[in-house]
Image 1 (cartoon, rainbow, N blue to C red):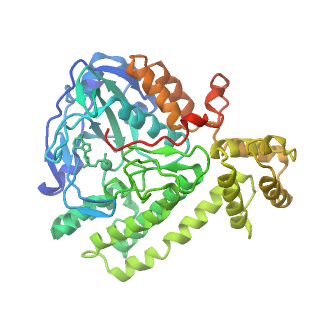
Image 2: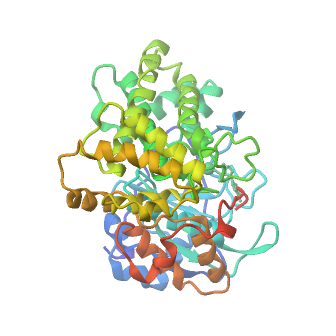
Image 3: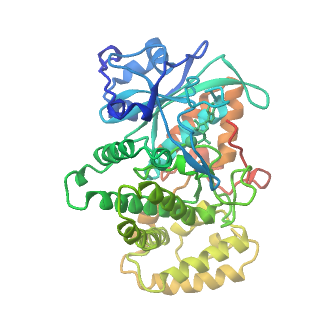
Length: 478
Ligand code: AMP
Ligand code: MG
């Protein structure tokens, strides 16, 4: 489809008026295309050639509105670092409409009713991070929002200093957050709360429409998807950084990429967000915060769904999480199936990695090629004894596999990425982009779309993070 053939719908606008506020995007000055995502264009049904036209830049900039566009911001609340904020909302994301079941949002397209003291803008560096990372998570098979395009501009935006504004056109099958429910529950607007529940079921859990116990089952499904998402993050070594309830998707997607990080060396206590003084959102805390957030959602849904039924669902959270996490970790270790005792082996391994300061991603990639010759793995850490001990147990466990070593290797190389989008790599790309060199964005984009492939030209990004670039922290101010 050509851009001028697009016909947008706006299902969210059918919800009561308090759920949203109509607002026109405020375009950036001198916009230009930095990158477009052809795979997402295909999902939307937009012709590839259209992505490289001036009209497309106008479209992403909010200056060109296709037929049916009726732009709006969504209202929500949320628990931020454990404290309830009664009104947040899309302060810098403007929804422009829905195409093929995907809701499009312009992030950084100006102020809305919910901007509070913010300028409604997003700077280039944070927009590059969101654009690339959502694609990287998708490349790793983790549920996430996506992005159609990234534009830059000459628009000045002030953070600690003057920077350039950018817009990411994000797409998602759902933008409803735990905090969206919290908003209406707190205001005791039960009619709106019911409408939102029915909307979320129709949008993300349509198999529950008109079935018995649909509402309790809806909550059960959210519990399940959240538990599974947490397991995926832990297995791949992803630290979200701002797991406020307004950043939790009712559809179980990774949303709102801020100061996130992939682990460099394994560290359960790692905190990527430098405003997170006490480590509430540290890597190791994520599954517990997932539960905390579900309990906040449970409180918000309590006027509509019996508490006992939701409690029953909550009892499943840790079971689902542990089972899924163990399954993923066993896959990463190359086991044909999960056996008793495997959890102990995982714990022993994580303790060993943490004690030896070993790069999490590199460890599994190296382990994928393990033939019994330990040299390659031992050289990842300074001391050998702890790893020798773990490998003794690992060897015994591998003996229980029925697949051949070659089959295991092939499988592990498709499970353990060679590349994850670490912060130091992003920083290199951002530094170049801030000097108007955008070429690295495309290179990184291609790598993260297929992180299991060798990409021999980028070997330097496949090793352990250089010491001086490890564990960088980022702030939310983007
Ligand atoms: P975040 O930490 O990015 O999830 O944002 C938390 C809340 O602050 C959301 O309601 C955002 O819409 C809002 N917000 C963040 N940055 C800005 C900004 N520059 N202008 C307006 N609102 C913002
Ligand atoms: Mg957010």
